[in-house]
Image (cartoon, rainbow, N blue to C red):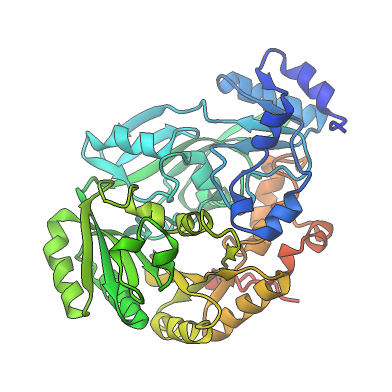
Length: 471
């Protein structure tokens, strides 16, 4: 049944374009979550929007926000739908607002750029490169992902090994936001306030524009380095992370047999070899090769960015794309998300490598977080049931990892963002009727109780603002 507020909403928005085709609505009510989590796939069943709204300009967006507030219709902002934590799945119907038409680069001033929320990250980087700059980091879905979607639902990405995660101070400079009220307000957030919106799944205001810092547009070299010993691959990766003078963009560890499970990479490793996928600035590649030799690695392939013989940019075999590549051939494989942090990162990873040797191979991504070296990842293994996911998550914690939860729709229960009274107060101020992506950010005990994924528990990734959620 359509949402009871739908007719009043459509009447109020006037000639703003809408799509009502059921197949289109179903497609745009989905993201990539089903490919990553059998729990989210199960819990998303039957959850679709009532209509797709396509604003043409800022005036249309104000009309949509005002109409939703007056009619009390839920609204789901959407970019490319490339996220995988259920960020783009409407839980309570309503209108999906397609923001991909807001795709202008507004200005660039040296190492700073400002752009609209719907611009594709790949297109933005291409536009910047002629000036000698590029984004500091991007997700593995760079080719299709949007700027607003990345900021609203992302966390780290390609480049985080050099510059830290999105939440780290200075990685988001400013956000222009629109409130969901009868008379919508536009506000500008700067400084630490930008993190009220970051990773909130679009639940506390519509991102209109973002101001981002840039990095020099180095000529990047892709490298596949193979090791006979998994922990030597980890130690090499940690040393590469610690080499602050060596400019890099990607360090992705793939324990055997993951390389064989990603068919395009299989020819570049021998049976039993573990891979480290790297991107290094060309001017520093000689120093990189010295480090490879010091740790007994084998450089099995080198190519300019995007020109490798494996058919895609190397980063499309890292982060979320590791699972996407594997699931092309084996849909049963799942994973979790643990955070292994210094000073004990290497030792904790060693404990998990040993513990999960009969469960599945480890996939790890190197990143900086709060200025410190960290690795995020977990074993990749065939899904059995929800209890198995909960058990393996708890075992990673026993090894010294901090567990997040990538099998829940809920922001707090996910554990990658602290949700406290300040966050909730901002949500109420920007969205007083809880219409934006309702059920995901506002603490709702009934929603938590109804979510199987929310029961896994997580320690959270913020020691200064600990999020503890265990039964």
